Image (cartoon, rainbow, N blue to C red; front, side, top):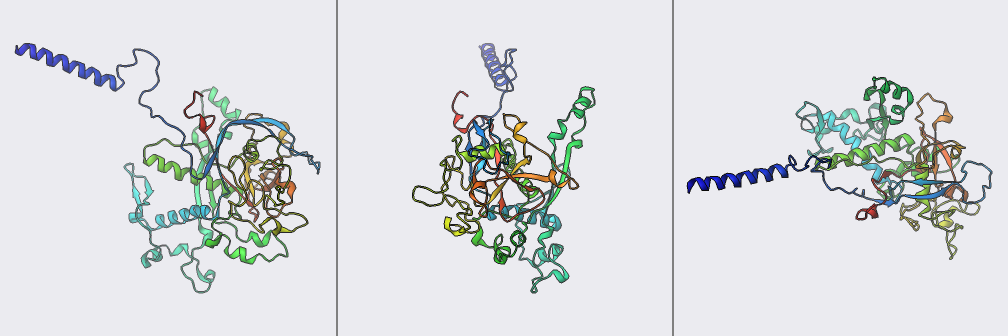
Amino acid sequence: MRVYKNIRLLTFGTICLGLILQSCGLNNTKGQLVGVKGRMIWNHPQPFGTVNIPTGTYHMGQSDQDIIYALTSRPMQVTVQSFFMDDTEITNNEYRQFVHWVRDSMSRKMLGDEYVLENNNGDEYINWKTKLRYSDPEVKENISEMFYQGDDIFEGDIYEFDIRGFIYDYHWMDLHEASKRIYYEDTRKGNPPSRSTFRRDEKVRVYPDTLCWIRDFTYSFNDPLTQLYFYHPGYDEYPVVGVSWKQAKAFAHWRTKYLNDYYKSIGMPKVNDFRLPTEAEWEYAARGGRDFNPYPWGGPYLRNSKGCFLANFKPLRGNYSEDGGYYPVKVTSYFPNDYGLYCMAGNVAEWTDNAYNEGINAVIDDMNPYYYFDASEDENGSMKRKSIRGGSYKDVGYWLQNGSRSFEFQDTAKAYVGFRCVMTYMGRSIKDKNSNY
């Protein structure tokens, strides 16, 4: 009887062990190709403050007569992959979060001790859990190098931060350089280059150039905006300006790292990078799912049926306040387009990721078209041109059209140029989550 019980216990134990092994994926493939087991079910989370633009095809380029015969936006049919896009231009307060993060990270590194910790590999990292109190006299003393010194001190404020020192130090991988044939040939010959070959280190001053309000408008009184536009809470929901293309790129890099660090802390995989939109993406989003429409709201006119202007620009012969704005207005002013995007025309023009070339539509691909050029500091000025879209509060109606193109230089900051970010969606459309696509 005891032997019989032992046999039953042994049989039961064998079955349990088999079930355990099967559940661990050690014995359940039956020799078949079934992929790696245990992968999480995952849908692309929608970043806060964005809308999803579905994959689609449209006619990019001029939707109306090319009245200045510039031939810079020849029509072509293109297809664009789905992406998330900020529903508004980046605001002063959103950009200030980036500035404060840079300031606080520099302060913590300078303070050391409990503000900087080491991991198991001996690498240092910033400890964001310990609260940093700038009102603490000891903290002020230890970070005194970050304040204005000597004659730069104004009105006796010895604890005013020297904003020139707010520098975002980061690096990125130049995939376009890595894809060049010279490196492809090395790889074919068995000598693939190391990743460090394509590493690019950047140091970018992040504080907006507030003096652009005076510099951009000769013989115009804009001193109050220079002094308070980025600083004052009254302008928190207004679009950030005075930010160069390089600063906008740095912001997008920080925003990606900020989000992916959080996902890593909760065990989720990282997502695609935030970045500036390509010209094709920007125009596709501006059209709101309509084709051949001159303006984001769909109609061919700058007024609605009640005679009200539909964007913040330079109407009539310079009656700036007639449209309800004057300088920039809040980013949610006016009605959004059919995708839910605000101020895709007017308010402030917006940086795109594209380098500017007048005749590029004649040669770019019709699938996710993109023209990229990374100009160095000593490059010829014409090579530093980056495309801007949408027109601004100082522009006439022509520049508000979906197909109109213009440019500014990548290392300049303007009082009428802002930006918004996009992130490529991993799929055709967010609405396809539960479909068979």
